[in-house]
Image (cartoon, rainbow, N blue to C red; front, side, top):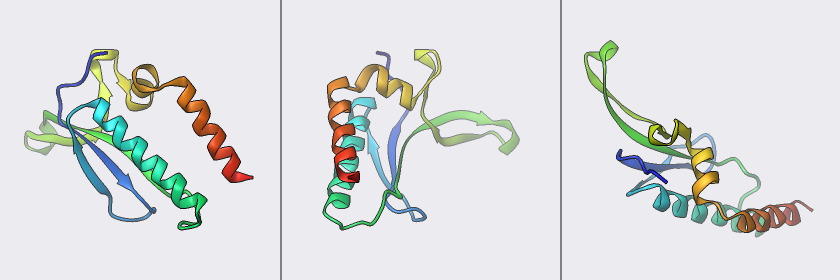
Length: 117
């Protein structure tokens, strides 16, 4: 697993539309932990009827220092995660390939399905 050298952050919209909750993270592993915590919290809130639906979004962004010639050479800034070191993987593919325990995924799917019933 090759991690990106760029600054990363988790961006969470708890109820769309809204302002995001942003957490700076040191790497992809820490980002995954934050995402899992947020996902588990939402499952808890939904199951216990604190929230009526799943209208949330979580994304990973990375800082891109590349000069944007169309904007006077300013850096592109925050953009969606992509890992050029791993053949251009986007976050979902990187997470599934390196950070996801298949047993854990099955358990979460079962938990979600039991809530829907």
